[in-house]
Image (cartoon, rainbow, N blue to C red; front, top):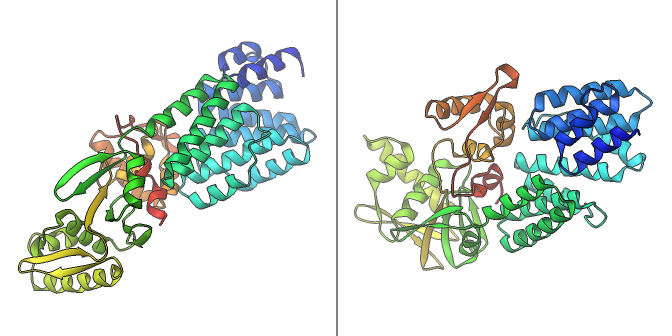
Length: 406
């Protein structure tokens, strides 16, 4: 490796892309192309970065298998940063196998971290947790150790293990300081601040207030019947009734939970569940059927009793009922939660992360753009969607995994 390539590599490792470009900006050999691509990625020009890395991979030739594998890893990292989540997984796995066979365990570990970060973005929390558990952070250099702890903190926050998340973030902060990379330290600081921002809204006996993630953890462990509108479930001290796939039942139980300890009129329940303001006998008959299904689903936790004007929720073993809702609600809250990370997302990546069709996601984006909540950049396949971060709240409980986990 010549002197300029070595100097550029050191600058990139220290988070100094401009310093790296000063060394190799005018060179078109394969190592220089790869370093220029990584530098452009750090500067946020992902389209140019991807082109440079691909040129580098082609320039290395078939005998430079290790260098080509590193280019595949760099391209996957660029794709992740630009929220292109449909990268060829087999190519990345083959690159990791090559790196492991050639003894480049640092880049092989980096590949695993990229895979885990992608799993978190698309809501596959259990797979991410399982893969992270198989990684030993002990021998990692400081930068990768910090990323490992950030991933651990992200999983712990989604699991509502806030003590574990704080411990992981403290470790990440120390590792980022040792690495001396300002961007990494800023990422750790941003994650840490999210623990001290309102994450949900609690409604209980007619009163409403905002909760931190730590407060949410305590609430779900308490002796309270919680109608969880963040995850579309009803909870009581570890017992969970999942209603994410039964929206009518959840609409009914949420209306009953918000009114508790009072009852809810039949007409109000019909309007909430069936979205009609002109109920007829068919709606009243359907309401009786759906309430019967709700009683059956909640049999171990609560009953739904009839009153003169409607129905009331009556918990069986606890005294209190609370409704836990998102701090920001609306028909497209999940889309906004993903965009709130400040990154530019493609509609295909949003579709993958939300488990929805691309057409559905595009309609949501068009509605949000019409309301001025998001805006697009680029055209065609390079089109990306952005929104400014929501000030003063954390969107952890809005993310897709929250709707998939029990």
